Image (cartoon, rainbow, N blue to C red; front, top):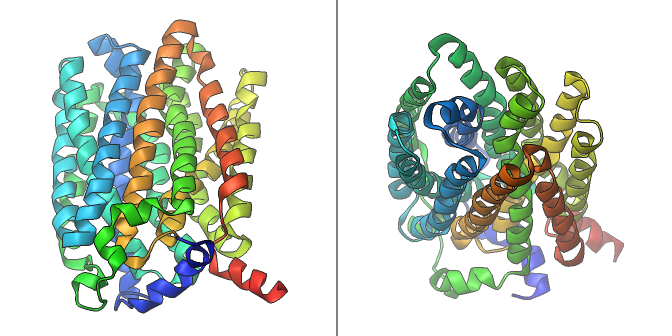
Length: 428
């Protein structure tokens, strides 16, 4: 793919395949249902972290086991997402999305039945497969129903629930429920209900891709799929930077609850309050960062949003015994920008890097590869390091990951935001 074709793709191709859901009230409804369902995916993925101090006491797990549980789900997600994206581009969204939602709802319940590490890991692997299968097609739907000039905003609004349910609500709900039920298993049992409620809405509301509705002619790119997608320079940049951002977010989200309870000796409810800053910052960041990139440009926002959290999280190395409000503020800032970049790289940049018939595959490749390395391998490595050298060492790997992301984006990312490209043309 040439530079000029990649830079103009976002504004040209989507208009060639108009969708009746774009720019209507139905667009909002579709994104809302997808966002709520994806929020439940995030809740299940993250709730294991605030519950881990209780799980480890009951089943005698260590930090390496925690990293393994999180990593197994992430790696399974990683292999599932690109395959599910390709299937949904080829055969339709609903046939992939609906079974995935049913499976992860049912299996989230069974996490509360696990008695051994092997059982827990197996359950989390299957959940990871179903959750990865949900994300890629749903990101393709969001791109399909969104107008190109506000793609960053709509992708960001869709991704907001990932931080809201996973990092903001999960630690608070989990710790408060533990005060009531005193058993971590019951928390998992309760997760089955909302997912199954949303399944009928997914089936009735989700539109199929225009090229499967006869609204667009298949192209050579449609037939090539994998080879065509992997040729995109911006897609390769998105893969690397998404890995860096996910390594930062997942490592902190998974390890910080144990860090606060076992290293700083916080009470569980106090830990839940401070760690919820990750989710609150992420909620705002996940729509504000991509939205800002619609106006300020993809390159400027990408680079800035990876530098700031490195500076913010360094408070934990310099002054770990700071007050709770100060640590809350540090985590809020540290989550605001990288959480915003998860949807930015895996949704906005990925979908702008390819044509409209390959968006789910592109989003799945970025999300899937990041889930394997950033969400799977990175937490496991940090778990091993924490067992060997102490959990206070957990911050070094995520900080290094974002530094790598800054270098890659600064050197190789090409601008694709329609407004930024228009400004560039006006100055020529």
